[in-house]
Image 1 (cartoon, rainbow, N blue to C red):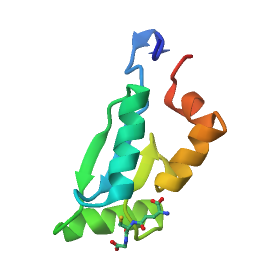
Image 2: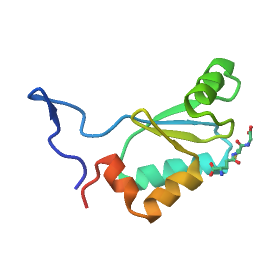
Image 3: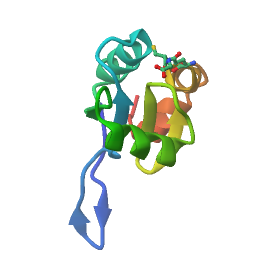
Image 4: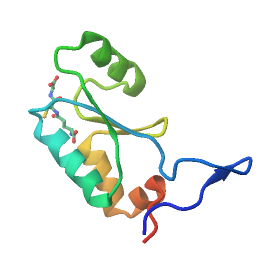
Length: 101
Ligand SMILES: N[C@@H](CCC(=O)N[C@@H](CS)C(=O)NCC(=O)O)C(=O)O
């Protein structure tokens, strides 16, 4: 099962933290990150930075990194695919995503 009945001040809010991937269409690490998140059953905003200098700059400012992908769970910068996969391996990713197993 995924998510829970999360409430703030009594109001239901999104079951999942907002997940953002800054990436490109051709990058294999981006594909791997998208696949892992899909396997988890969570949705994400996919921001393609190819040819978009503003979005690329936004990614660098938010993450401090220049490579794609750059992944965020809520406001928390995760890093790239390697870091996302490390979280999956040590069991931390489910907690961050709010996935109940
Ligand atoms: N260790 C990184 C590797 C990421 C990486 O090398 N990405 C390539 C594209 S697949 C990249 O951004 N290269 C430099 C660039 O495109 O500016 C990860 O796991 O995300």
